[in-house]
Image (cartoon, rainbow, N blue to C red; front, top):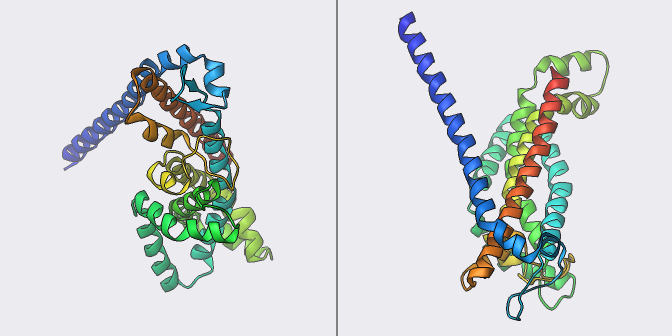
Length: 291
């Protein structure tokens, strides 16, 4: 029995190592492919003109390939999503873990899990039918296809993921933390916000990263509610994101434009790598402080 257990543990260890190597190699190969495919287009346009040019127009000669409006739209949408979704998600997760009755929390947990699994195109369709007319009417706009509409859809999409992971992390905190704090006369709310949540910070950051990854890489939902106009971003005007720019232009792009669109993909890849690196550093720092 001991020999079989050691053999199974060894096989599992080698399989885990193999999958880890495959994952790392996949990321490296994707990065190499993006550099090889998108690098020439960026160099042809010029890095400065490509990143900081404020005009995208492929119908004129010579074509104008400035992606600053797309980049700013993506950054603004991500920032607004984080500002709203993170505190709401953490508060809901705290309520589910420590305030709501268990039967109610169980039902709510099931609903949130279902919302996390809904395809993004469904969110986009609901946003187009319900949210876009609402924004148009509330702000008296010619059309409700705006950056604000896209941000609201992204918030709704990211909330279930962040709530689910955050609630699991908060629940996993040892009850001794809460009991020791309450025994010292500290009220429950202060204990949760200043002791339990910091103890679960690594898991909460991981949940934020997962939700943010979905928001940054989203295409179908935002293309249905954002208006898809390559102008400098304003919350009550139509915009185009990095992801939607690729989808919109690729179908009828020339060879030169295709290379530039691959360059947009390279920028998006680097953008996501930077975000992951920042959050990974925060998670490592939190884990070291906790340990």
